[in-house]
Image 1 (spheres, rainbow, N blue to C red):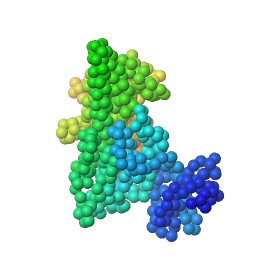
Image 2 (image 1 turned 90 degrees about the horizontal axis):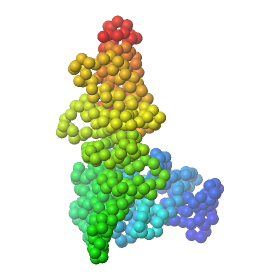
Image 3 (image 1 turned 60 degrees about the vertical axis):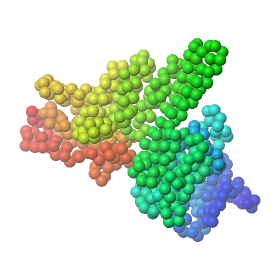
Image 4 (image 1 turned 135 degrees about the vertical axis):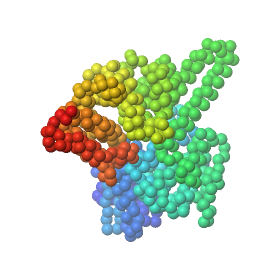
Length: 582
């Protein structure tokens, strides 16, 4: 070992010590002489094993792409340099100051609070891979590194931070099985069947079991027979019922019975976290009441204790991103508590709540119910609050762009009915935002456009039936459409797709009215062309996000173009489409 210390690789990397070795690979801790002796890790692969050499190159390329795609740099080490000699291939990456999750666990179960924090990070990382259409296929504690940011994970306020390593078995979704670890493997991996994202859900569940029990599950097979999940995942000791339920649902043998996505799993973890926080709060409150009762001051002191406990529970819910539960508590000094947790954040808890609703790319029925039951009905945010107008806009915005009434009318609603449901839900919030905003506000222009579209769509059917629809209404609507088309260029693919869908829907439904009010064929087709250029069509959809692709997949540009063109054919004014055919 000593003979390699001080050796220089590629005239740049000075070896400090060897961190590990295998049959055809060595891992070194090095100092980067080209970067002020920054600490790096160099993985050295013997090229004599051609298969391992090619796998190492592919893994390095994948890790580099993942790091560059992850704008927050949360999950993956960076690949700084790739080079090779005649005999070896070298990968230079970040040095992670920590230890593997498996080494950290040892034989001790993780405390619930730390487990849930780590579990959500694992879920978020795998969701990130799934969004890239990748399956990790070998999730296990040994493939995660726990950073040495806090030596005592049991201390108050301590946090766990994970980095994920070893992407050699990562494959495209719904592909053939590759390498796996028997203790964490799903039945379909042992049977050599095709794997998909639900295979990762099983691997995650097996990893959770190891974390909460302090031991590995049994292997997937005994000889040639697959073991049942009841044999493999036997719980001992006191395990929180919510966590146990989550693990057993993850490791169902039938993939259709597992959580179907990391979004579903993440929400289940958040619910378990809320339940744990409430349990701690109730125990604390009970003990406090008992203590004060012993001093004969039960009534007054208990009330004070409740307020203090509420403050603590509010702070804990904010810290854990349980924003719904925090909003329900509403302590008087909530602004001060929030500022103590996020001293540099002016957004406030309501904006954080709305932002959290966007994380799975849709506003679902339960989230919509909370908005209406608590924010609209109970008015926890005052119109005097500085963020009131922006909060109203963001709620209207999330309805306009993310609302997915998937369970509305037993999933048999038409596209037009769903569109109307989404627009009508947006209108109340956007109208409130517009009435409380000024032109100097950043969100004002977008609020005005969205609100104009919602108002038009909410009132037009009645006005047309009563004969009170005026030509300028369609002209104003077209102006809003052209302004809205500027937002197609949003970096957020879901928002871009939803804007495209809104534009296509409005033009398809009202192109005849537009044509009768001096909106030319070229103007209408130009917006349709702009949508297709941004979103793609058919097999050429441009979006990578799964939700955005689903929205874009509903577009039929040819039908809209044919409808527009048919309105102008054989009409006065010819091919320029400028005639009023009313």
